[in-house]
Structures are given as C-alpha cells and as structure tokens.
Image (cartoon, rainbow, N blue to C red):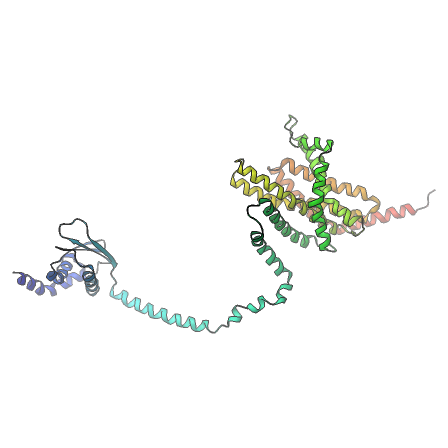
Length: 432
C-alpha cells in the first residue's frame, strides 16, 4: 500500500506542476511530500497574502539543515506566481509550538537576472571609479605641504580663524572645569576678542597699538573696577545705588536716577579713564575714531571682569534652585555676547568725545562732560528697563548711535577744527 501511494504521487507530478506555478498550496504540499515521504515528514502548506507557510511535522523534530535547503531550492525552481515570502516551521507531531522556524524571500527568476546584471554593472562602475580615482595626485587633493608652509600663517584671516576656532578647545585644555571663575574669565576674554576684531574693522582707528590696547583693557579690568567699588562706598553714591533697588510708590523715577547718576556715571567714567590717562593727557590722541576704538577696548575689559563676576552669581542662583537651566544659559549668553558690545559702544562714545576734546582743547571739559553724560544716560535707561522691550530699545539705540558717531566722524572733526580756529582768531582780535 505504501509503495502504491508513492507511485500515485509520482504519476501525478506532471499534472501538479502547472498548479504549483500558479501558487496552489495543495499542489505545493503534494510535491513537497514526495521528497519528505521517505523521511516520515508531512508538509502542510497554507498561502496568505503572498506568504507561503510550510509546517513540517514528524515523530521527531524535522532536521532543519536538510529540510530548509530543499524547500528553498525547489520553490526557486517552481517559481509559484503568488508567493513572495516563505515561512517554514518544524515541529514534533502533537506539539503546539514549532521547535524552529525560518523566513526568507522568494527570489523570482527575473529578479535573479536583474540582480546579476545589477551586480555586473556595479562591478564595472566600481572599476571605473577606482581608475578615475587613481588619476588624482595625493599632494594635489591634500596639499599637506602648504599646511606647514609659513606663508599660510602670514594671512591675518587665517590667524583669526585659527584663534577663534581653537580658543574654546584651549580653554578646555588649560582650565580646570570645576573652577567656574577661571572658565568664566577665559570665555569672557574669548567673546571680547571677537568683538574687538569686529570693532577694529568697523571703526578703523588712525593708529593701532597692541600695548595701548592691552593697557586700556587691563587698567579697566584690574584697576578701574576696584576703584569703582571703592567710590561706591561714598555716602552720596551709596544712596544712588540704593535707589536702584527702590520699590517706592514713585515707581521708576528713583531707579532711573540711581542708574543714571550712580551706576551709569561711575561705570562710564571708569571706562573712559584709561583713554584719558594714556592717550588724551600725553597728547597721543588727535581724532575721535582712535578715541572711540580704545574706549571700546576699555569697555570690553570692563565686560570681561563683570562677566566673570555675574557668571558666578548665575551659577549660585541655579544651584539654589532660583533659576532654571534655560535661564542660566540665556543669562550667560547675554552677559558674554550682547553686553560686551553694549559696554564697548558706551565706552566708545566716551572715547569718541575724548578724541573730539583733543581737537578742540579750548572746550575740552564741556566736550568730555557731554560724552560721559550721553553714555551715563543711555546706560541708566537700559539698566532701568532691562528685561523689557524698552531695555531692548535702549540697547539697540546705543549701538546705532555709536555707529552714527563713527559715520559722522569727518564732519564733526571739521566742525571742531573750525570752532578752535574761530576761538583762536577771536582771542587775537584787538580789544577796544
């Protein structure tokens, strides 16, 4: 009887093959069972949405290593039209769950041809690419010799790129990350240097000296600010500084007076002092743009010192839970990026008027007074309304006013020269 059944399967194989190619699961099962019959394995086949499910059952778990290659090879030969993927399971008769399973995609004959052609095309393109790649010289595409050529470093733009790009990495190497004060000072210097370069190219002073620049920066940061803190203890200034914290019913007026006549006046005098001592008094200053530049550098020195101090306060406030991480990052960004420009612009205005005073020495004190007064008022207005749209407006107006002074430099210089000549000629006229 067993031999008769085997013979019947053999006789119907040719009739089953067309059905198999159409994807008939019963025909596929019949052909598979021809192979598995002698091994005591029964194949059950089901087709769902292009997935052919084959369950192999026997008294012992079917051998995966022999059964799976046969199924893969035969299906690739039969090419059932509706089958795209195949899931094969092997289990012991009577068991609910399979002992093993395997899923694979059925590669169609056309796909094999296409894949073979694509592989050949890819190999050809790869050979062409490598051949083209070998036509380039390494020294041409990677001019490493130029990198080490000293001529490259004679370009100031290259120096600036290297400095500003690598400075934060240098800070990370030389500073102690746990020392917030040291890191804040170094980063303050970094951002101030960026503004310093931009201001130099914007102002274009008549003459530049590294010595005078560093003197103005260092004097304000290490001498001017301690002197400022000392003057703050004078009773009249104590009252003015106390007014900045006023919560009286008069509202904003006491705070504005305190910020203008206290904070603004003292800080702008502090920033203008090195320009007066090192440039105006020795008569090195003879035009306003140079005074504006060195005044701006003094302002950056002030911002460096102030930024280091406030960065510590922001960190302590964060540690106590008094601010969020977002507020901490934003406050530091404003302190290190925006306010250095603000201090530079205010001090640049004072320096500008010191330069005008150098031209018109007969009215020197009034001119200096006007410059300091303008800067103090702008400073006080910003402090009073900081954190609001009015504060932003005061900040923007200060920057734009400073730019306007720079643009009108030649006109003001001509006016000052003419005023000095008129005053000299009127003093030389005979009196009746």
